[in-house]
Image 1 (cartoon, rainbow, N blue to C red):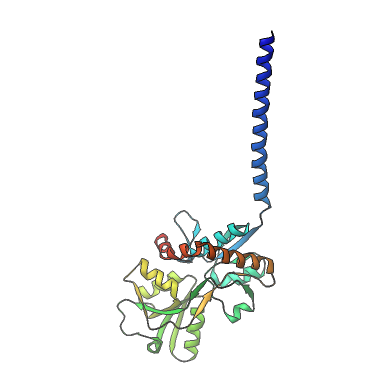
Image 2: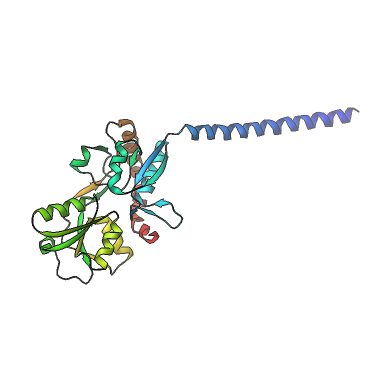
Length: 267
């Protein structure tokens, strides 16, 4: 009888230990879930037809340099992000009305936009490039755009540069499209003579799909991209700037930069 009691006592101890361990595991899992629920979530607006910075892949997910960089910043700063794909021209209005919290969409920092939103520190250097079909030898610079038709993306700095050239009597017609790939297609079919677009995007397209367009002349200006938040949202802006610097310091930024042209393959 004594031996039986000892066995029962041992089983009770084992059961207690296992139960305690299980409770501990559940407690840890519960704590992790609670911490995840407490993480702030921000809605990020992007125009996901602007490779290599943002594009929708075959699985329907928004990917690209901006997405990976923003994800790295979010991980560093302890917040979550949800991406919303919409036309570029509607991003600032969506930010101002509170439908989104952040713009991550290859947006150039300009004086006019700085009057509407607050920009992060610049995260990539960019400029405007003039591109034509590979076989076009007539256009070598802006000076050759006299009487020509230029394709641009609606609301982009390329669009405003084309308007400036038209007002100066250089460009004859402007064709603007919601997405940059449509502007490139317009050159391919001969509907436009040239395109004014951001240099890194144009370079990435050429690297991924050579033989379609080429860059001519020098960059039309010097500019930089930044992430944008609503005016006065200093808390979120500080998170983005701090996270961006940490991602740079860790070497992660350089890794993403090397992969920049690869996003074109998912178009």
